[in-house]
Amino acid sequence: MFNLKKAAILIMTILLFSIVTACSSKSSSSKKKEEITVYTAIEDNQLPAYMELFKKEHPNIEVKLVRDSTGIIAAKLLAEKDNPIADVVWGQGITSLIPLDEQGMFQPYNPKGIDKILPQLKDKADPIHWVGIDAYMATFAVNTVELEKKGLPIPKSYKDLLDPKYKGLISMPNPASSGTGFLTVSAFLQLLGKDQAWDYMDKLHENIGIYTHSGSKPAKLAGQGEFPIGISFDYPSFKEKGSGAPVEVVFPEEGSGWEMEANALIKKDKIKDAAKTFLDWSVSEGFLQLVNKNFAVVSADLGNQLPDGYPKDLMEKQLIQNDFQWAAQNRDSILENWTKRYDSKSEPKE
Image (cartoon, rainbow, N blue to C red; front, side):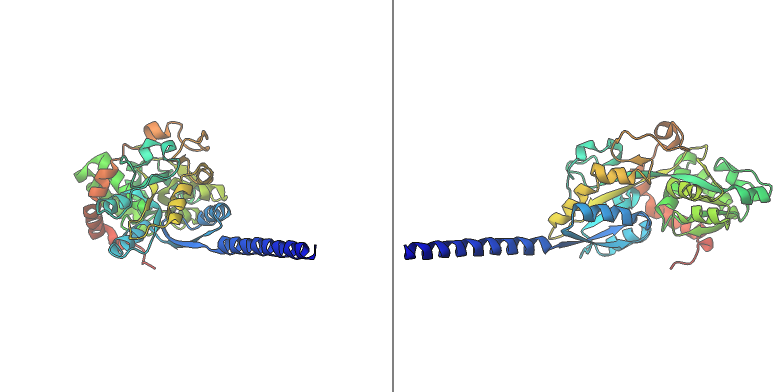
């Protein structure tokens, strides 16, 4: 009887030790985090909400964000081509991604839910090399109070911006450093043709007060009244209006150039599972619902209505027929010509 009791105690001790050890091992494992480096051109003020959602859904993945403008992110990725640091590029203008893809810098991968992504906003390859998350489009942010003080009408078209009475009152993003700037210049070239477009930009340059290195800054400058007319894109323009600034958002009559923010998996010797998880999450319905608070157009049909102030025929008529492949292939020559002609009015780089 005594031996049976000792044996029972011994067995219980072993079982208890095994359970404690297993729990300890599980606890230790749960604390282990995999780190990934993500390069992004997503606007600074949008990132906190996005990352809060990711951390909530994936607490075991540590994301090291490197945020900069579209042009700088593209240049950084290219410079690091032979020894890539980033695991993922997230929310980067597609016309700056396509040239990198053509150099074989992205790992083909179909994120979970890829079949729900609109065909216009994803690569045609299978598996895909890149996938869009949203689309943004050119708008004017116009300070109505400042123009009223000067007795000037609100411009409704790109043609209106050439009127000499707007001299020095317009700001626009530099296309070499801003995706918004490039989509605008690309739209001029596609709408007007090469010769007419450069002639148009020569005349527009006379009225430009400053070229910024951020696509959202012209809208902010318009809201502040510093440059009452800002060629920007829809999100910051409506944000200025929503904040109480005396801003009217104008969709140019000729049509809006547009871009998409897209993601890709960087090709490197070791592809981390966490990087694939991040790409899965970045086209998930939960994330895109959050993006939809900032962008009227997201890459999946969520059944949401366009916000007030957007044209009802946005996708069908307002957005130009954009040849992203052409824009990407001609990007370097376009930027070289633009810089040579107009860079003298660009703000200093930080």
